[in-house]
Length: 103
Image (cartoon, rainbow, N blue to C red; front, top):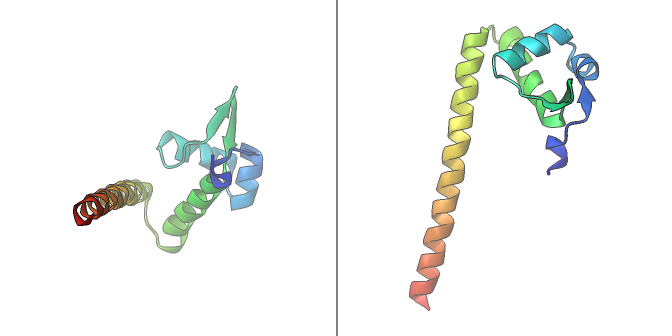
């Protein structure tokens, strides 16, 4: 597991790191904008989660985008990342096939 994805921060610490109320983090979790890991009843946030929360904060506070817009942006970013990974896998496959043909 990448250290960026390792769940380490309890909700109160995560909220302090991003200067948000813990209830805001719970709302974002309900909306599917951030999905902390669970250890029993405790939510544990990773550094990646903290970065996502900061991105959400920027979109809502600096750019004035509402949560529905943030959800759409997040979905589009996730789809773009999946497409990028698929494309990279296809390129690797084509490179292997080309190498075999050239041998």
